[in-house]
Amino acid sequence: MQPAFPYRLRDQQLWLSADRCIYWEEGQSLILSDLHFGKTGHFRKAGIAVPQSVYREDLLRLLCQIQYFRPRQLLVVGDLFHSRENKELELFLKWREDFPHLGIRLIEGNHDILHKDWYEKAGIVVSPGVLPLGPFSFVHDIEDAVGGNTYYFSGHIHPGIRITGMGRQHLRFPCFYFGAAYAVLPAFGRWTGTVAVDPAPDDHVFAILPPAGGERARVWEAGTAARRGIGGGVRNVTAMRPRAGWTGPGSIFQIQ
Image (tube, rainbow, N blue to C red; front, side, top):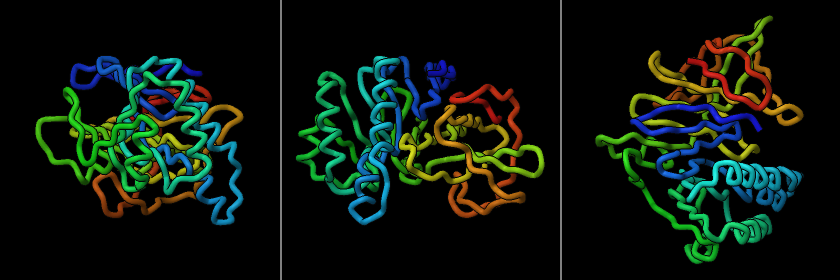
């Protein structure tokens, strides 16, 4: 596992993990988004062959992050689960038994549609809308933010960034996006897509290079791609070159 990338924000120490989550040191919290647990089981029920190993690997990655950072709680900014209850969520309940003292706070996302009794059984506190904590606020979709003198953490759109290589090749990676007023986390679940973001010059973007032997970046054709930007709507997203060096597999590099 690669060391986490340090990032200061509002006088708070954050650690960006290449496993698509953030450890907030002062809050003793692991912040993550869009795990979509149960998604592979949901697709298998619909007759689409998706191996359960994808889901088990996501659970294992989460276990590794908890063991590494030792958080007091998980702050999930939406879409912890994908749909209705299935056998994969039974596996989650067994996994949860190994962490009886770990708090889990779920900021409700559009996919979090399980009955409240299920969340109570799993030891999960559900917060609808916006959850303020210290200098930060947490919301699933940044479009639902209510303003104020706070900095938001959000998810929902599964942000990615496109960079240019030799021979007119484009690669797209999941990324952490930090704007002036809010951040957007990458989807923790690996069986998810990405939406290209269009950062402003003063924004900070950190691309996540996939681990060796794991998923590979998809090579995109030359040109620009019309994708939904951070502010909503459709934009032409041009390729960008990383300013920091290529740091190896399973790591983070800063685009801007």
